[in-house]
Image (cartoon, rainbow, N blue to C red; front, side):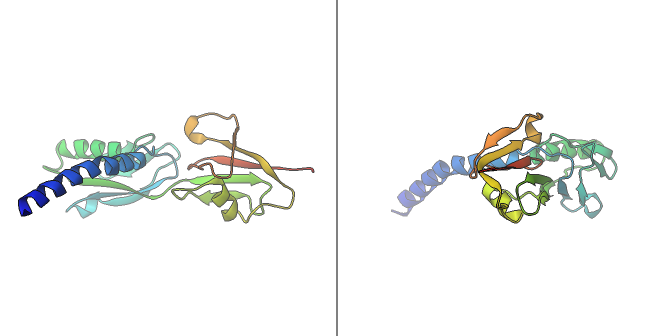
Length: 179
């Protein structure tokens, strides 16, 4: 009986794992860019564990390795890169982890009470972004919201709705309504 229960438990555990992997993949696809603040931890090596912000060129200073270009990498890719570089003559078996401490800002402009740059928060929607900026002004349009996405490299505004996601580096404009 116990053996059968254990077998069923293991089967259900393996069935549940892929969905958690899929969730983790969503987070790992985030690409680092200028302004992101990260923490690099190398287990057992305090002098190689640092907190730093990506420069405007997308680089970070790192002990022994100098300037490391992290622009466009995921945290997983940066972890693998640092591990490989530290294996090359510095450490025998480095255990490296990279975490995002603070995402770069998004910007909101137009018919909001306090336009400006605000720290990105995972799960941010336009409605939440408007709340962070003090809410709509009395003249704000109820449907003319646009975003220019840094991640897509363009400068063409895209029309969005209140429930659409806002990403780090986005520039959001809330239009005014004249009627």
